[in-house]
Length: 185
Image: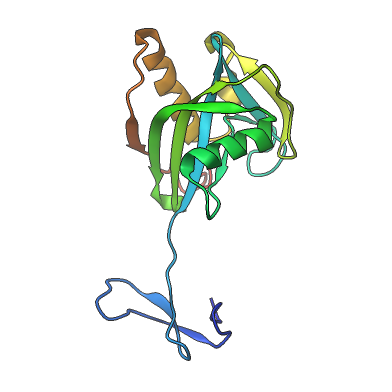
């Protein structure tokens, strides 16, 4: 960052009084520019004994399958964000059942909040970010074609919980596999 988004003047890197890390500080208006993790929200859309997956039409991981998910927007709750992302990516209307998992992906500064959700009807269609949308049973999940480690972790936990009918809230960390593929989360 070179210039203040508040007044347009130059910023410098420094540690504000009482803080414990360097921040971009405006030399003119005094604004402290904090950088915080991005929140990604999504869901596991359920209908009968199937879940809805989207094939990504955009990078990263174009052509791979994922659950509908994306960045939370200002002014919306995490549940509203998950509903919006599902409508945008899968053309599907859902009802949130319950929060299901929270994953910290600190090496890319992201926090994933995933919900269980019920399809409100059987309508779905690929949105701008998806090239295909389909229902999958557990046996048909294309595990080798799942886009992100966090989505695999969510789905694996879901299918561990499913036989019991009990879906407690889970929390975990996704760690980088290696330096070469640290971008895959």
